[in-house]
Image (tube, rainbow, N blue to C red; front, side, top):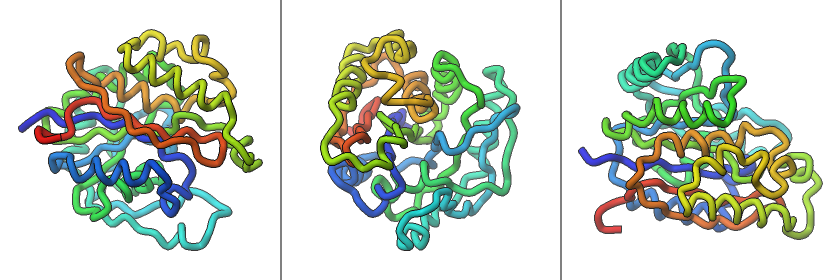
Length: 265
């Protein structure tokens, strides 16, 4: 079995499920070019746990609508993918081997950080999906180490989807600015250049080095999945940019694939 790639995907706001913009079609095209995985493991900032890292072990995870105040249609959406208890248990094993305390959660479903981007990437919901929680609190350098612990799953038929947002200032998003904020473009460009250069050190220290980092991420949980993806990246992985543009003035929707989508791509 070939090594599956790692995907960092910007899921933006829950409305991305209904408003695909530029990013949705790019994810859909990528999904058609991916070799079919045994399962998808999603890292989402909408599930963080103190103490043990938890992995969903249910055979049929429910679709969690973990947001409020949006259009009724969003709450009617379902993503009925099966789970994969065996690979969930394998993930717990790998995490423990890497020094993380970890266990199975046999009840939790898929939060919107998982199912919203998967609606575009794998719309048929046939591939099994499970999630792993992010430890809380989590330093950027430890997010990278967390990705290293998950990396062996790539050799075992698992597509790692690290779901976050390239920028995530909810206060400014709620104000619905009329035009694109200049700092969003500057921050997104800085990230893209650092990724292209393979400069992991800069990205791990983004808070001090990136332009307007604290404005782009007043809290860092939506940036951490990118660092998890970097931890799971191999030195020879090619970088593919999915330029999702900027929506609502302040949400950069770029996604990044590390590794080959398919031999014909």
